[in-house]
Each structure stands twice: as structure tokens, then as C-alpha cells.
Length: 223
Ligand code: E4P
Image (cartoon, rainbow, N blue to C red):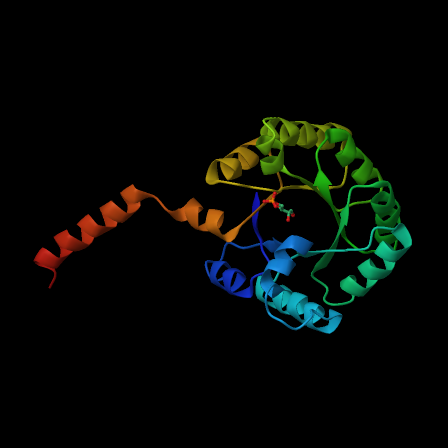
């Protein structure tokens, strides 16, 4: 399973990319807004596109950039502009009627599409039929309403395997490291997670204690 960062923060992407384990990045309007909120000047398309280009260069892998248009025609126009930013851009579309229409048109033109806000196996099936390259089921948001995000992912992975559909599953809305283990065991192709969860994946108190003890013992005899 590949590991993606779910962020629009360049520093976070630089840091995790340096570990050598980062395969891509996903963004969404909320994450981009977080980067520009409170900066005073209004975010222009030029600034946004330069930011997305920089993310592509640091991530060195697929970068999902989400459209903000809601009608198919406008989604296609926006998607084509986003796709022209950098070869790594994957156009992210919401799983709605308009999103499906836009997905079909963009994917027929060779643009890679990630269908987002997936909360059922049938939505994933529709997205795959519309030519999506990726589907993003939201595990955490399902768990948030006391349902089972793991079960949603299990069904989608199985459906895609049984039907032999050419689409990759991105386990999204990851809240904690157990979600990552669960996604990997269930056969997700990718898990996209916030920076804090990426850091938690590595951290273990016994690793810190063990290393400290090795260093203390070594200090006593080192040449
Ligand atoms: C997916 O690509 C989304 O950006 C993301 O995973 C949403 O996660 P959230 O539920 O933590 O906002």
C-alpha cells in the first residue's frame, strides 16, 4: 500500500518526502483554505496554481487537486486547467451526478480523476464505470457517525477485485495509525493521511527507550 499525505502544506510534504516513503499527496478545498486563511490578500488562481505546482515538484508523485465548480461543464473546464499545471496532477471530483459526467469527459481525454466523498460501494462502482483512476472512500467520517469505515473499505476493495475494475482505492479521511494498518490489511492501494498521523506511524516509546539504552551502554565502552 502506498502512503500519501493529505495536506496542502509544503513544509509537511518536504519533511515526509525526505523520509523516502511518500508516494503522493491529496488536497481538498478545506486543506488549501487552511494554508491561505488569515493571510489578508485574496487567493488568486495564479497563486493557487503555483502552490499546486510546487507540491507536485516536492511530492514527485500524483497530487490530487479538487475542483470547486459544481456543474459538469464548469468542472471539466476547471479540471483541464488543473491538469495543465503539472503532469502529476490528478483531478479530484465529488461523487455527484455532475461529478460523474465530468469524470467521464475528463477521463476520456486522458485526464486522471480521483472521485472523492465516497461513502458506499455503489458510488465506487459508478465512479469506476465513469472512468475514474482512483476512488476515495472516507473511513474517518463514516466512523464519526458510528458506522464502520473499515467495512465500507472492505466492500469496495472486494467489489473492485471481483469485478476486475481498473481503479485504485485511496483510503481517505484517516484519523489514526490503526486506520492505516486496517487499510493495508484490507487491500487498499493507497492510504492518504494527515501529517500528524504520518508522524504517529513511526513513533513507538519502546523504540525511543531501546535506542537511549543502546547509546548509554555504548558510551561506557566506546573506543
Ligand atoms: C481525501 O482525499 C480528503 O482530502 C480527506 O481524506 C478528508 O479527510 P477528513 O475527513 O479528515 O477531512
